[in-house]
Image: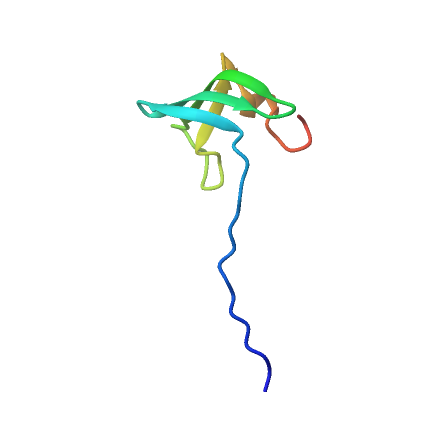
Length: 77
C-alpha cells in the first residue's frame, strides 16, 4: 500500500504594482514597478473589439495608448 498525501491548497502571493479607483466605467490610478513609474493611468473598456482574443481594455497614460505604442508588451519595458 502506498502512502497517502493530503494536498493543501496553494497560496499565491502577488506583488501590488498599482492602485486604482473606479470612476464610471474606467479605472484611474498609477503603476509603480522598478522599470515603470506611471501616474494618471486610465484603464478604459474597449468599445470596438475586433475579435474574441482582442484586448477588452486599453491602458492610457495621459494621451498615450500603451497598447498602440507596444510599451506594455513583454520584453519591451
